[in-house]
Image 1 (tube, rainbow, N blue to C red):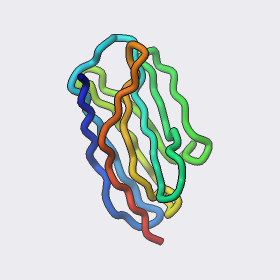
Image 2: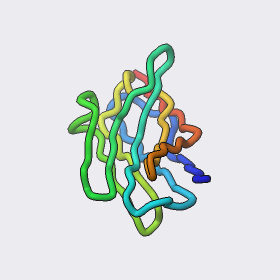
Image 3: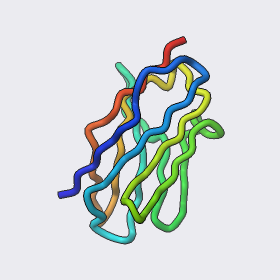
Length: 115
């Protein structure tokens, strides 16, 4: 079983920044993808950013040019740098790890952006 632990969420004002971190207890495979999803109240969970072990990176259109995903494979860690945060970014942010045809989820970290 893989454990994912997120940290770095909090309450900020519009225009400010936050950095989320996600540490995986282990990597089941060297070929994998780590990502971030979010779910706002009353909305469906959506992909925010995803980075594969081969270097492919994808972003949701709503966060392009504001959010940056990165990885430190030596630490089994993924980061999400979030700049110019807006109230619409308020959500629970979940870390994911995809490997060997399975997707693992963290418990989530709350990000709240006040106007």
